[in-house]
Image 1 (cartoon, rainbow, N blue to C red):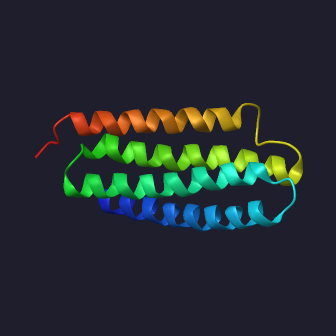
Image 2: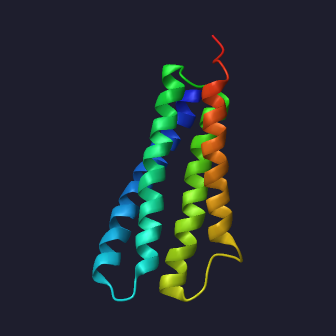
Image 3: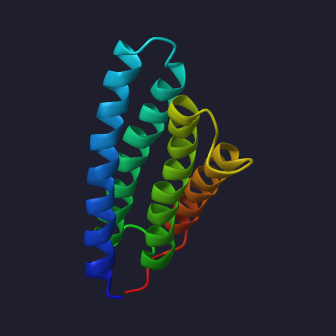
Length: 125
């Protein structure tokens, strides 16, 4: 997969995450007892922007491309696990799988650390 294709996929996924984040925020505001949806919304919205930022940093050559792209995919996967688990718990009464939300959180934490490492290692020219 070329960098351009990976970048486009990540940007498209971030756009879907952003839209879902706004929808979940609206549901959290209007549905009774929907606090989980507010947390899910926040994670989707913040990490959609983080994925886009990581793509832009890679494209500008400010971070190493491979770890930067891995961090961006980690933001997407982690946020989807976290938000998906909370949303499913809200509407279906059960989660994706045991420890899905904490696993997603750990993936997001690791992705932030990978992005930090990608910034500290000089990009290859």
